[in-house]
Each structure stands twice: as structure tokens, then as C-alpha cells.
Image 1 (cartoon, rainbow, N blue to C red):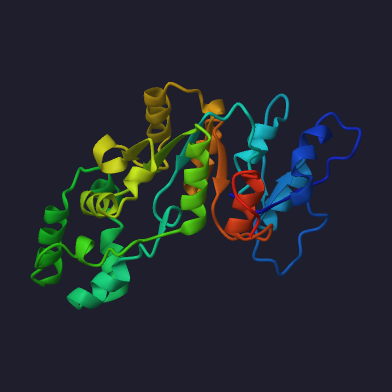
Image 2 (cartoon, one colour):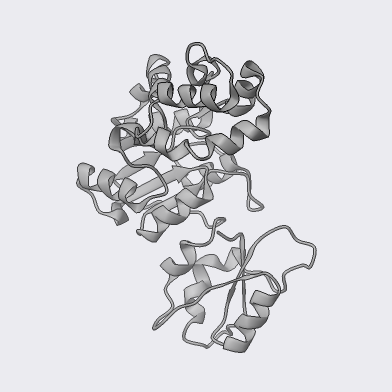
Length: 283
């Protein structure tokens, strides 16, 4: 996903009005030393090729240029809350709760070099979250690969989440106004049980967990299965998540989505308050 737009479209061209909702994210000339990512929009094949050579992303489209095509790729573009939004989906980790990092703690607990553990875990991340591999099976695998006996369940032992007050307040405010609010989380069984015990799941009208669904973000089926269960269309939903890949996939379905992260356009809580005016005070 991209942080800013760069374009050679000019006022008066048929495609130019499509850029209006994104005017705050359009830059005149991308700076050479920027770490931000730029999406170039142009009708010229020559100009697009030159932009690629400079490391920019290029939007390709056929027919009419549509705002949804841009929004799906623009991380910094915040959704516009409207009356059509009747279902609100919240990710759990790094959104509703913080202090969820675990691999560094597990590496210290077991005496395994951190990068080696991470490299191994990445092969099992999605199978664990989708319930294909159990946590017990994973620790048996770790014992086999690293020759280290594992006692108990380190996933549970090191998981010490704490509530993120601004988001908890927003959820409570939305529900007090009669809005339908659900959790849409990639997780594993032991973490889900800890979250339930601390009252995190009780914040929601319903909580959808990847390990129970057999589906995980960013797959499109994760979102469509929740929409179907809730009986709403993508246009009626608004989703909050801290990962760009999850936001990109949800936006590709037409779900209004907020990347809950600190960006050049504001901190995550500043942007949360801007989107949900009337539900949260500005920080």
C-alpha cells in the first residue's frame, strides 16, 4: 500500500475529479530522500514506466478511473463515516489490546535465538491461526527442530495483553448508540481464552476468531464470511485494523477501512478521532 499520490493528471481532464477525495494526499514532486511510498497516476505509458524506474507504484486501470481503485491502495486515506455504516469490525491485537508481542519473550524463555525462532514460526503462523496446526503440535515441532524440551504452553505464558483505552471507549460509545460492533481477529486458541477471561470479547456483540472460522486475514473469504453471517453488504461495514495488508484486502471488497497506525497525516488516535467525530473527543 502507498502513503501518498503523485499524478500528472490536470484539471479539466475527465479523470481529475476522481482525485478530489484524496487532495490532502497528493504531492507535487516526491522528495528524493523520502521513506514514504508513492502511487503514480497517469494516462501516459511513458510516464508510468519512468515512475516505475524511480521505485514508485503505478496505478493501472481500464475504462473509467474510480475512487475505490485508489482508496484500496492508499494507506493514509481515512474512511468517511456515514449513516450507511451499520456494522463495525475491529481487529483485536494492537487495536483493542496492546502488549501482544510474544516471539522475543518466547525466544528468551526457551533460549532459542530470536531470528531463528521467527524464521521457523513464519512457516506456522497462518496454520496456527486457522486451527490447522494445534499449539501442542507446534511445541512438539520446536522440540524436534531445536532439541529443546518445551513445558506448558509458552504462547499462553508470555501473552499479557492490556486494554487500549481509546479504542475500548469507541466500541462502548458505538454500542451505546445502538451500533452493531464485532471483533474480527487473527488469533490462536490460548490467546482467545486469555482475551475472554480479561473481558475483551464481552466488549462486542459478537467475536469472530480465525482459529474458529478456519480462515484468516488478509484472505477475502475471512471478510465475506463475516459479512454473510451478519447479513450486511460490504458498503455497510467499516473495519479498523493495524496491518496494511489486511486493510488492502478489505478495501478491495468495498469495505470502508481505517489503518490504525501512526502516519504522516496524524497519529493513530488522532485519525481515529477524526473519523469518529461525535463518538470520541479529539486527543
